[in-house]
Figure (cartoon, rainbow, N blue to C red):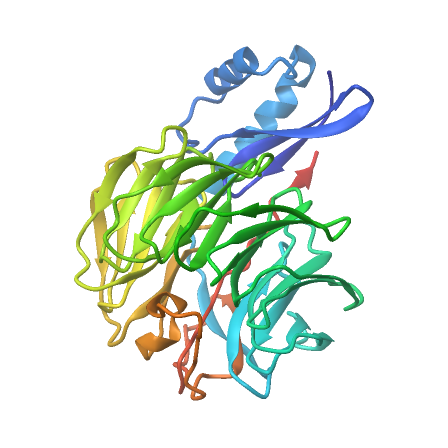
Length: 422
């Protein structure tokens, strides 16, 4: 093996190593999730060298320089404010989801009008309309970090793979017998996973368009799924009160995570793939060991259904969103509640932690519009949902995040570029 190049990754903190092995260029990462401004750089570099044979004495100074840059970034205070940048009349019917590409230069919207649209973030220009589905386009995703493909999942029971650059449809994935309500690309952008109300998850090959695996094991609808960051594991969450961890290469079960007393609403891995968190309509979240499958903790405190949960980018915090109108932030190490965020008058459907720390929680009314609140294969939505996309950009101006006049189904921060060549 021969090291070719080092890259810096700001969020979460880490270093990428490009190296050559057997004539092929490969990449591995060194996670520095516990890096602080006080970290001793020389001691850290010594530890890295002891654990990573690719780091030779010739690149020690470069590695130190990259770590110092990361320390500078970690120490920066985030005093950004937000103001309304642009409102777009995006679709003729309500939106279902939004998603940014990795750089934030473009985003996509899904809608009940059976289309997905690709937009330029800076100008607000509509770049492409992806037409072809015969029912609601509900689940959408870019193949980040590449951003050159888009996957759309629909109530017409199909998933389509599109070119983000031309809007051309590459493939239509057929095989599900009920609505597709969740999907994800693996980190390598070689597979698409789809979850359906037919109780099945399926893996599809991006290059050939062929079905690679059918993951059968749940006894009720699947409404959430997530790849780990290495792409060798997939976790699915179901109305059957369980989550299942799957081996992606074989399509076999690794662990069945049992313990919830209500439907699972959300599942997610932390960054280093060691933990899985599940949210449930039983008013709790649970944290599981990804290797052994055992439940490490139950996160209590909500007095109504928990509709969403997420880790922050370093995996040190867990944020929840609940129908009780509150959000809570827990430590992923002690599992204690650190903050309870109150103020919403309705249920909170989405929890997301931005790359640099601030939290934003969006309210969703009425409860029937969240997929986790449906126990049948038919999903419906009130047409009074807001169909304007509000984009917010950083500014030192006075914050004027003007409330929408209708319900907000989804939101997100776009991630900053995290890879720089040195």
